[in-house]
Image 1 (tube, one colour):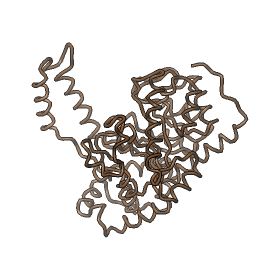
Image 2: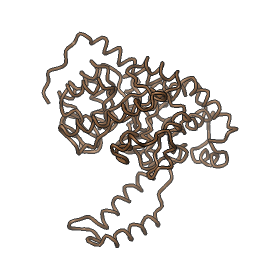
Image 3: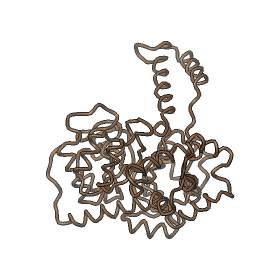
Image 4: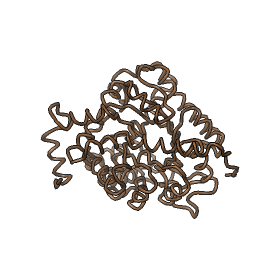
Length: 418
């Protein structure tokens, strides 16, 4: 029976680092991941490459240690292999402020990077279309590469665009990002009367028909429930955590987690510190408020029009209010809770690496997955349940979506206007 508190566990980690070479649980974790490598639901490496290098990313050595770059990254080829990653859904994200045809173009640019990574390094990556592809590719030691469109606005209300994204390798779409779109509600804005419109249901129907996973990270609880009701295939949360642990709108409430058992879907835990720790969430909110109060152009702010004074005052505030640390053990607390409510068959990992500014201590990059699995083994998780978390569960969900698509093969796309 595990009776240690999270605080005591964190103290023990200080005395016995999770990365210690003689840690028997780390050795067990590596054995688990040798049989079932990590399949991460969400990594923003492509977006970071474009942001940092533009088209110059083609000249960047992705087999170098990217921690040495001017702007260090969480991902590179050696660390992917060190972390025993066998599959990755690469996020092809564009900001929700970009809409219409411009959003479609920006998404294609992101897809081009993923396909370019695979083309440049075929000895390390291979595009995957199905669960069977992932199983085959991960056995070869390569990283099976799929894509996720991180926001329904990126299809510009056009099912033809959705279908072409699927053809290019997209295997999930997040229904919204940080803003409502024309047909679904985001978690970041006040809910509307209809959290999912008839066109939104038609989008889900077409995703089911294609075999594309319906991702309900970023959406409101109302949209979560409406999407589960509308989808014939299991849904996913590609990068979300537990709201009962940290009351953040991006996390999943317990009543929705309970519904996930019947749905057959999966919630993949997010590493974003503000989603993992309430103390960090409160600090981030306070920091944003202070920044605005010091310099909020054009009409207000304690130091409006005085950028040097505003910067100095903000630095003093940060010195007096140090950023709370977030740890690997707190991420494991979220995983424990998700498994307790939804069941071990319905949890996974969607780290959001390279999509977050900072990471929990102990989870600084793609090389650290074995340490997280070791922590769960230390808490009494079975090796079989760790294998499900690592990749078995998302493989099951993807295969289920493919089976639904096969059953809808004779159907035609819905004729519903936005």
